[in-house]
Every structure is written in structure tokens, then in C-alpha cells.
Length: 216
Image (cartoon, rainbow, N blue to C red; front, side, top):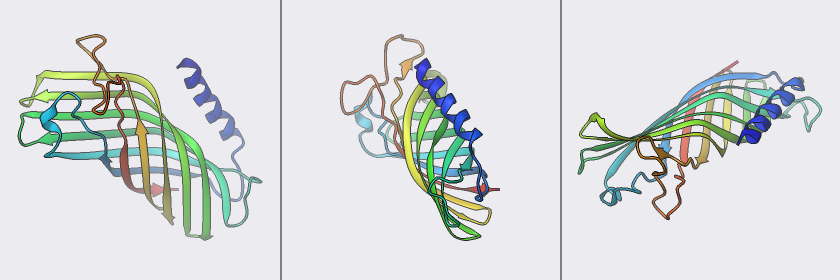
């Protein structure tokens, strides 16, 4: 895992040093609605249906544009680097007194392709490696934090793909992300949250994310 983290940092710093060109780099910040498509029911069979789910996210990063790599006055290859990304998901079931909360802090990096048909309009398509620095899932019973079960994980790789529409300084985005942390109980070592579909100790946590923000 240390080698993977070092590779993540090396690729990031090397690519930034070569970023240049007639396309300006774009610094962005955005918030969004994150729809969790994973199931929080590996330990609770009565949660298989009837629950409500919510989610939100925040991103801040830069799209570095490269000169001379398939670039023209309308197209450009770049590197999309998200310095900090925060995901929050919540599940509720009216039939129980249990809430499930999930929080993840990540950084993301990957290639992007930009097509700009006019000065004030651009489309970006990207695929990124997602480094989940920290993930935590809390099962809160009867709205009492002291009765909760907390599962945590540190440094888990994932991936995502998506696209942006940039209209002047407005940035609209859509992405699909997936990551599978190995979440361990904070109070009972080697007890894992697991997966609803099999006996794996990893918990797949994909989501669909819709974002809006600004870029400069």
C-alpha cells in the first residue's frame, strides 16, 4: 500500500511539472448530490427494502492542460487532479431505530480529454484513480451515538469515471465512483462490515454523483 501511495504522489508531481499550453489550467470547487448505490444491509436482513438514502459531496482540484498531446484549438489532453474530495451517505429505515452514516475523505487523479467548440463552452471526459485516505461507517441505534458501531478503514484505492460541462465559470458534472474499503469494527478487531452479496470482508460502496460548482 505504501508503494501505491508513493506512485500516486509521483505521477501527480511529474505530470504537473509538464502542464502548459494554449488551454488555461482550470481550478475548480464544487458541491453535489451523491446517490449511494451500495446496500448497508450486510448485517441487518430487515433492511433489504424500505429504507431511504441521501448523500452529498465536495470536490476541489485543478485540470492541468498539456500542450502538444493531441491538442488543437478545440481539443486538449489534460490531467484532472482533485486535491480533496469528501463523500457523505446516510441511510434511514422507518421500520427500525437505526441510522447508517458513511463518510469518506479522498484524493483523485487521472487523464482527461477536453473539447471546446467555443471560447465559453467546454466538455471534459475523465477517468481517475481514487485514493480513499479514510473511510468510516457508523451504525447509530436509537439516535444515541454511545450505542453505535463504528467501522473504519485507511488508504483504499478505487476509481471513477465521468464528464463535465463548463459554461464560462460554471461547472456541471456527472460521475460514477466505486471503492471497496475493508471496514473494521473499532471495538472488535477483525470484525468487518463485509458485503451484502457474499462473504467478502470488503464493502463495495459505489455512487452516482451530480455536481455544480465554479472554475477559473
